[in-house]
Image 1 (cartoon, rainbow, N blue to C red):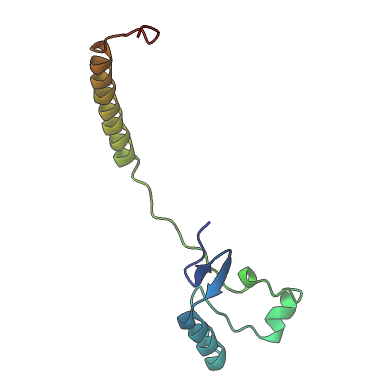
Image 2 (image 1 turned 45 degrees about the vertical axis):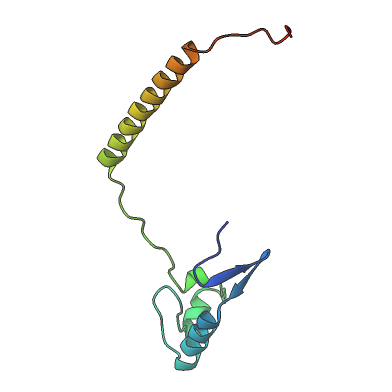
Length: 106
């Protein structure tokens, strides 16, 4: 599993990079919302969330995936099928040219 963008993989643990530590400190000091990163919640908002401080309640980190071009995928699959057919044909031609030898005879 790859670590999130703001973390650096170090052995089996993730470590914040210096740049991201600076970004966190800056958002904290400036008390500002940063899209998909930080949110300044007042006590009333925290109370509305039953004092639950889980990040997704305050910061939307969802990133919409780009749409998939089904036609392009179908074409790519068709091209791959053709490549496989060519490779299988070449393999079968080479296989038919093999001469069987008896390994027991020396």
